[in-house]
Length: 475
Ligand code: B12
Ligand code: SF4
Image (cartoon, rainbow, N blue to C red; front, side, top):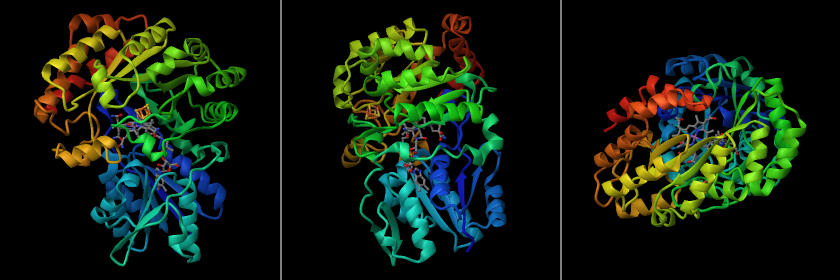
């Protein structure tokens, strides 16, 4: 077989709540860069079906002409079927092609996924770089696959899980993501609502994991409950690389928890020293308690291009926050939004409805709280039992999961009833949240004429994309 690997980003639905966007295939670029460095004799291509507007049929044609030995793809839960379909197509073209899946969903469901999707040969669990390289080497050199840590696969009708791979100690040792493999597409990646259609959008990984233990979240388990960051200098250098070499302007940090406290000061200094042009826009995700404990740093990051901060506020109820093991307090939410607003940073709050004790009244209280908070943007999500979370285990044990179609696990579809509300009613309540927040003519007019450019974009987007109509259709 040829020494070729094809990474495939399959056609996916976009998350309509955040509007129209075209993201770079971030994980694939990260893995491809590592592979390129460690196995330079391997020929690598990335087929980004979204950017190149390729259909399922086109994937087949592409695989036929490139004739790879390996086909690899990544997915989180709502993309699991799309990934399996890529594997199926690869096997249809040539059953000798080795198909490799990785990412959050497959890492948490290796057994189930290998049984349900027999066209997937190998699942790489957890951190992918080293496992992928060792797997390819083992297949190519015909050495023992079971020596490769972090793998799951079927052998003679039995599923084998090799031991878990330890995490990479120093993330600075990773190469820069391989944007050169999608160079022709970079100008097309965009996030309309957040930065405009003509602002090149790139994704930057500053850290992996989280030290918190929220019961609904997959991230901490996936990364062994640790938070590892690249050094401040490396992050600033990588931003420079993405900004200057590839024209990236809107830079979305993948870090689930930005952590101003641990690295904020150093990072701010490094970014400032680069004197980036004013058009750089940085997007962070942070915890409310991290924002409230570091108002000075929040202000400093605004100076160097941080325009937008998204925070998981989750709930109005201390009881629910305790149930989620979120570890934040309600006053933090008010304080954090105030700090962001005062610094002219677009404040984005995320909320969760549909926990077991939720009733129409409690969701109404959540809605009122979300309005009172005064964030520029609110996104309401439905509690989703992602495999690998504590919540999933609990929900499964108790028989709460009413929808097992993973394609619906996008936090916009109600998957579970609550003690008092049916799934349909939870879905109705979600719609009501958006209707109340974005459906009023007065608020829309105020939004469309807001002094904040991002807020104006957001309200126009909500009107143009017919978000409310789409949510209504889910009921
Ligand atoms: C950026 C981002 C987005 C962006 C862009 C995605 C992109 N293409 O770049 C946008 C905004 C579009 C987006 C959309 C959504 N997202 Co999102 N997103 C993220 C975020 C913040 C970063 C993703 C990333 O690049 N991570 C960095 C990479 C390196 O980490 P990784 O994927 O885990 O990969 C490593 C290993 O897992 C492994 N690996 C992964 N894949 C593969 C494949 C192979 C072959 C191998 C060998 C190894 C391997 O190796 C990698 C390196 O070690 C993550 C959270 C996070 N920090 O990961 C959420 C996250 C993935 N998103 C999530 C969700 C739910 C969504 C949405 C449904 C919207 C929502 N409700 O939030 C939509 C889905 C849209 C769709 N249909 O696909 C959830 C997924 C939960 C789950 N278990 O399914 C996450 C985890 C957020 C969260 N904390 O809940 N997202
Ligand atoms: S929800 Fe956020 S704070 Fe909680 S564990 Fe996940 S990444 Fe960490």
